Image (cartoon, rainbow, N blue to C red; front, side, top):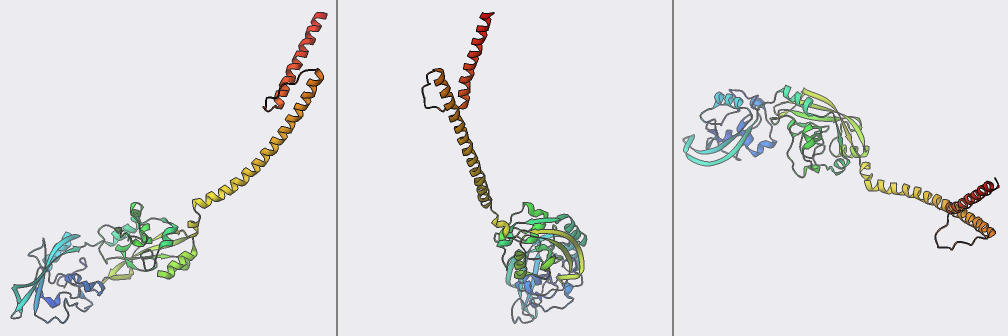
Length: 370
């Protein structure tokens, strides 16, 4: 608005100068924005469209009251001199005072101060088209992965799908709880709340971005084209985990509205949305499945171990019985049973000792004969 303001023109009317109160909110005037009614009222730069004025009070008679809005730091300047100073100052916050005077003989009576109010006016400098274009190139990611919980908890009405398949102001790109917030590189370290319930600070795609100067949309491909709001949310959930090719588009503005004929910047991005099926794959579920598989394997191992143990016991029993018979035949007494398991290895050890003794005896006998 400041960038496009001209002189002569209505933008600075009533600022640092006294004019009739009924002119407070004429089309294209800075003071029009002070009225709450201006939020939903149309605007045209320099009042070129001659939109209806917004009366500060219903049925306000002409010439009954006058007003001025004094800007701190700009006192004594008005009209073109003031406009040039405001543009030179760039983005700045001004303390201002609204003063309403009575009338006398059809003129402002500065001795009759009817009402005053202090307020702050934030004037934003213009963001150039090149800056807007660079913001899309430098500040937007190539690809994002969106957790399943974000999609599952999203509501309509709500911010999650704002700017998706619909054109909204560019300064809203990084609002809390918005899907497009995640496209900004600055979102990596920024807080998030589902549906923006925590009102975390918005992330601007470009510093010093003026309100209403640029607009944007993020178009999703596939069966979501042309859908928005609840219809879009339902479709995204029905699609489940899916990768979308999307196009970020930034437009210029005209009279405070998007100028779709003025495409400032575009960029292709990839958005991977995880569906609710990802939420069902909990670590606990994986653990249960793993435990079942492990249980089967353990049962098989137990069975094999049991069979091997039985086979070993049978071998040990057979060896013990054979050794027992040998000892009886040799006239050797049986060793007492201590209750410990007698293994084939122990039996072979005793047999080995006996065999060694026999070999030694034969060797001694042979030596004597020689």
